[in-house]
Amino acid sequence: MTDQPTIFLTRRLPEVAIEYLNQHCRLVGNLDDRPIQRDELLAGVDDADGLLCLLSDAINSELLEKASRLKVVSNYAVGFNNIDLDACRKRGIKVSNTPDVLTDTTADMAMTLALSAARRLVEGDRLVRTGQWTGWAPLQLLGNGISGQTMGLVGLGRIGKAMIQRCRGFGMTVTYWNRTRLDPAKETELGIEFKELDDLCRTADFFSLHVALSEATHHLIDARRLGLMKPNAIVVNTARGAVIDEAALAEALKDRSIAAAGLDVFEKEPELHPELANLDNAILAPHLGSATLETRNAMGMMAARDCVSGAYGGGIIHQVA
Image (cartoon, one colour):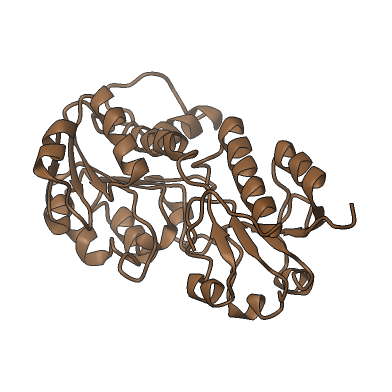
């Protein structure tokens, strides 16, 4: 149909989303499973009515100035710190994300990293695979217990709250810090205790980060706060890489001033701080937080529907700007 809007896609999505987009619009852009080049993106948005992008795509004034027809930016992510929301608002461009659908999947990943780091699972796997394992030994790869330990949740949004029930299943005590404290009655209902962030760092055994990235949370966990933590502390990050000062974290892991870290996100993805790759007490995952077939399909459909509707000039369900 000639009257269909044009949607520019920055990277191939799950097939259900591609089929939906092809049915409802003229789909152009990067239809391959590879990162798009910046010049390719800038050149391609000039006649787009909708833009369906990833968290790794910078949607800023430079790009928006080249997209005179753009009505909607649909971000295939729950976060949207890659998008200049003010610049979009000034141009009347709607912005959507994919909330809720990846909550449980990401919480599952955070708990997986915590458990794997505590029990030194990746080190054990490597020992067996490389033929270095000589059999069971009383002192071999002793890790940290889970049951009875204290989980400190940094941020209590959807994913942070989903972590509470997972921690309960392992018999953990849950403390939390959040920019806005919950009502005490709600804390009692959830069975959690509020602590100021420095106090949380001093007292928790595990830390799971669930804050959005902003100026206020950039390097929220820095060298000073890492220095407050116990020697047995385990830090898990499934939020945004820059919430942790990676250089300071690498130093703390190398010095064994904290026990371990499980990271699914990094400051300059896909680049890795050079020290981290050499540390046995760092578990490094390639941003797998939402990586289940069911979740990625649901994210794709959510992003595609909002992008199509916005490109036609209609409303979008998951609007953030």
